[in-house]
Amino acid sequence: MDKNFDNIPYGQHHIDKNDIDSVIKVLNSNFITQGPQVPLFEKIISRYCGSKYAVAVNSSTSALHLACISLGLKENDWLWTSPISFVASANCGLLCGAKIDFVDIDPNTFNLCPSALEKKLILAEKNGKLPKVLIPVHLCGQSCDMKSIYKLSKKYGFKIIEDASHAIGGKYLNQPIGCCSYSDITVFSFHPVKIITTGEGGMALTNKKKYADKMRLLRTHGITREPKLMKCKSPGQWFYQQIDLGYNYRMTDIQAALGISQFKRLDSIVSKRNTLAKRYDKLLSKLPLKLPYRNKNILSSFHLYVIRLIDTQKHKFVFDSLRKSGIGVNLHYIPIYRHPYYNNAENLIKQYPESESYYASAITIPLFINMSRVEQDYIVKEIEKYL
Ligand SMILES: *Cc1c(COP(=O)(O)O)cnc(C)c1O
Image 1: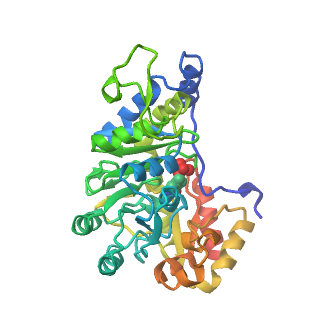
Image 2: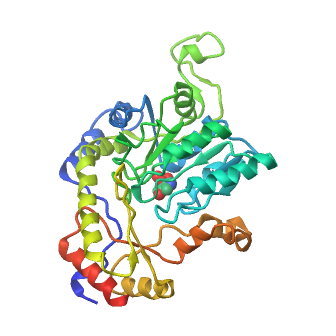
Image 3: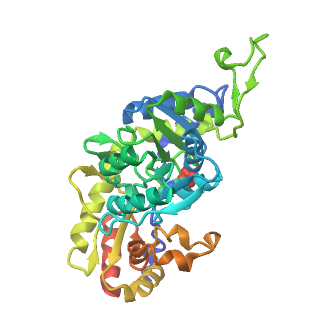
């Protein structure tokens, strides 16, 4: 192993002096939680994305959970999502008592495939098992084909939550991801591996007041201090009422301040990630690999750069060898239905040929904004060597 390349991570958060100063300022203020930073962060993000409302929470998982509840997802309803995602995209439905089913991916974009979705919907309509909620996931930061998905949602009557945990700063048809033109709710993650971070954190964006109100209420125990919402006249200023059953999913002001500071670099981070991705495209173009799909109507935030080996026989060998070379490759993701929690993986594997073929060939290679050209060249050289 080359000593200079001791463990290049697949992703790495980026904290600068302004981030640190912003956090310290909040620590020295009167509010480290439930203060002014959270609503300010929400305003900044919703303005940037062009959504009417934004609700900050303590993770994207919480945002997905609150989004599902707000859309009325209940016991025995169906939630459909992509198998190639983090488990949270499905867990939010399970937490509501709903049943989970998956839609296979498109072999080029690795996102939920609209034509597989349509086939599945036709069948589900016959069997009376149409989904109440669909969660398309913008894998690697590249938007799904939202126009086609939206059209199907109107025909078959399901709601859409965009899992944009990877995709803040990206665009679809010249609109920012998060504008919710083709969905009911969009969620972002601010986990440190994602585009911008608050340590842990997430946000749900929507254009519908009733969903925003519900998510706001449920992120803090279902408690309200709004006289309008109370079931009786408020007897005094101490008064609050629990009018629903909620959680403590609040984001702190410390986190929001970090988010506001990080947000200032969002566009430059996305542009830098795209520059690095383009450089990979060029350097890897002659190798027997399938490189990330490009669509001129989509600006990917390039949260991840995923290569697929043409020769799947070499997948494990190349993966292990790159790890040995100190390169923090990863696999995003193990198809969700393969986890033991789902019990009947054998049965499910046959239903998702594209997801299986992805799982047998995909490798996430490092991409983070402080990455040097030398590191990138080394990674390419090692990939070439093992192929
Ligand atoms: C990271 C991630 C989540 C969960 O985000 P948290 O903020 O860690 O809860 C959900 N979905 C996808 C696709 C993710 O990558």
